[in-house]
Length: 352
Ligand code: MLT
Image (tube, rainbow, N blue to C red; front, side, top):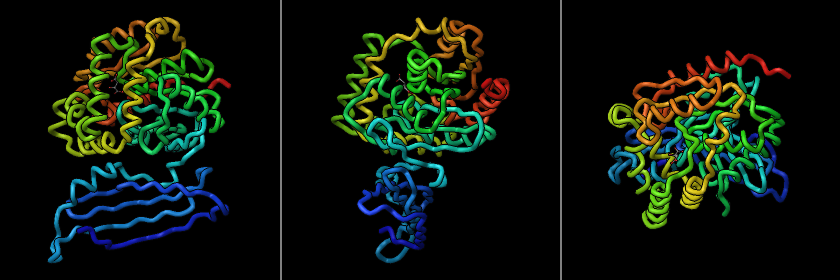
């Protein structure tokens, strides 16, 4: 039985009378027999009102330590610890969008893939000092609201509105897989907001008929069996075999992200990807500096397909990361950060 060992409570600001506070709960550490939950209460404008951190020990009825129940990890999803002051909520197009913002400087917008959340970028973001790193949870994923409507263009409109709310006129856009599909949409419809592109484990082609059928099967499975079943199917597809055997913390973080997402948001993302448009016509028009990153062992997007993508974009550069599957920033954060940092350094300060 979980028993609270230590609790801290900090008040940061007074709420305005009548405010409905939003409380997010994050599992910040989990050991063999203990874990810590952080509760963060925010006002509707995103201000942090109070934070509580409670450390629990799991004990048998005789008082002996016992392993943390798997249900706790599944219920909350484990995420790497982050200061709550770096996670904000902004009201965007009628939704509360959660985002991490770190550092000062020229902006870089990180767009996560499916069925992940902003924390997939945490290790990479931590190293890119000198840049303002912005990583939102897309609608229906992570801690953002899950409304009824999903499409790649909806995600694109959300992000353009988020940039407006942050007073960012132009930014480097770094998209992982589905995040890359959204990056193409932003380039197509919000060209003047895009300073440069980093396309990670992604493709420009739409789904084939066969792939659309697989999306429909996956939608039925999530509705029937929930996100736990999806995690079991996806983990071996998303990670390189080496990552599955040698990086248990990565497997656990990935499972936490997948099972921590609401089923309606996952279903919406599957529909959005299934119905996305072909972006191959865009590639020859991309006239901003572009870096393509591929995982050498990506089972979903073979390294040769990333080579084809880079070849189709004038002056794109390609880097293939060894011992990485489809989730390069999660599986190989050090070389991934290094190659992104080199690309960003070469961009230099913005022209205006
Ligand atoms: C992703 O990582 O975002 C997805 O695997 C992309 C896809 O399924 O097409």
